[in-house]
Length: 495
Image 1: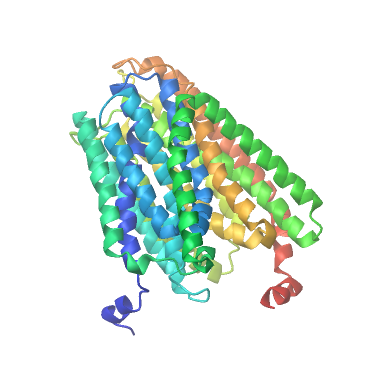
Image 2: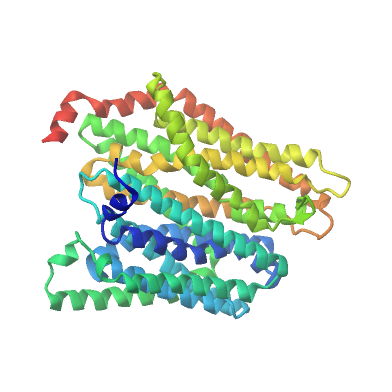
């Protein structure tokens, strides 16, 4: 049995530092993710439709730039340099937003989104490079990294809720600025151990590196005004994201039909079906900082045991369930599998869609039981978040692992990119649904309850229907996926 000191000594250089860097790097995103819609509507007087459109593009840009970040870091700037450069842009963005004007919001978001969209992938790549391919500790390291991210969300949501109750937005964004700056400080103190270990950039000459770095830096800075312009036309940008998603879906369908290897073609077909299911899940999930948050602010009695619950604190239900429930679900699944239960990807996807659907269906029930003031009891939205979080536990961890299993080698990049784009498309779709909500009149929750009930019911039953369809398709999906587990395939992979 290894002692704690021996276990700590066995951690590769840089892996421990990345855990703490992840916490502080997440704070700015947590603050904006949980506060942007409220800040835009309450402080800057945006309409609900305009505020949710901005939030939709926020999610689309953030997730859409992740794939490009890995390419820019690995081939032009190095992951370490791009991560710090992205964090610098996040610091500038949060500081700029704290100014309090509409113009400063747009420019601040442009800086922040460029940074956060590009540097998240770099942090993950720096972590995975600390381990050799056969090192089993990698999975544990990413679990710790995921825990660090959720801890950052928990702190960010908690502080955001405190300042939200005070309506002190400048102090909140300064907090985010300082938090992100501390991530840069930590990276600086650990600069040597965070260097890239396995990228194509390591093979170039010093002169070539300088040229590539200059080009990468130009792209990094040049993206800021481009994102700024697209934010000014949030609805148009959202439509472009949807069109891009449709085009990529058609391309993936064409590649699947034309692929010659029957086994790999089956895998790709299963991937496409599961990806469509995930689009439904993430569309509902991305309602949290948009329509669900507006509902919590205007239509929920947030007084619990004499304490006013800030809307951002409600999102901490998700963080808590993920941090505590993740290990428990993993242990539970291991025990069930040991008893012969077949818990596979199709089952988990189906269950996740039904769970998040149920999470939305409890809200109309809460609305129907609202008091004379039209406010729903807090327990209903709390139950909704718990059900949604349980659904996330089933679909999120297996997503990337699924790609590694189903993607042919030559399509791994595009299939990973497609999977990441799904969340961006879902964010835009969530903004469309949230934009259907009429402007709230403070103190008159009953004026919007019917609309909320209709939207939540439609989304909930839609997700349940897709989940049931996925259950029906489980035999087909298993047939498609198990085709990759033939002895011949395993032998070929081994060589």
